[in-house]
Image 1 (cartoon, rainbow, N blue to C red):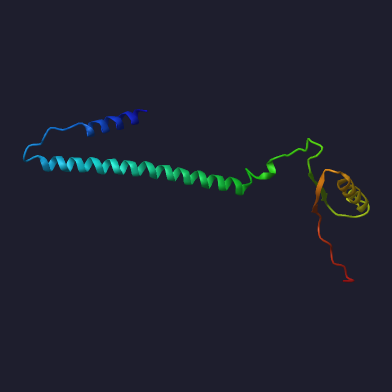
Image 2 (cartoon, rainbow, N blue to C red):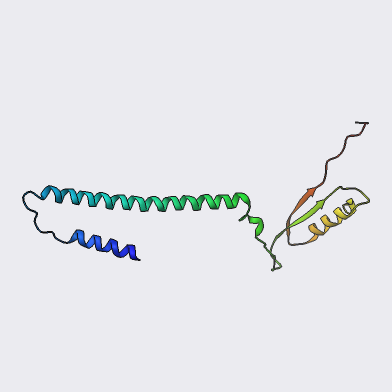
Length: 139
């Protein structure tokens, strides 16, 4: 607020009529007016420069936040409260898929059937994190 008052005082002083300079003083008056206008112009340019630098830093900060995942859409949880709302079912499979494990084909099929039976299901996504197969000597 103090800076604003100084600027207002400078503007008022500049707009105030000055007494006519002596015959030999007009050069000094013109130079003083030019110096004031140059200082004012540089001040305006500096303020705009600061504004655009801060805007650029904010923009880079937002891009970095998205890139690092701080503001990713995964953080948003959507719940289907209405019966008519369509949902996407997610079937997650972690680990080796084999008959005697928790990831047996029967259990996976039961999960898929339940997902497809739900009338709200618009689609099914399989998220599989399973190690690859090993080569045997017969291959």
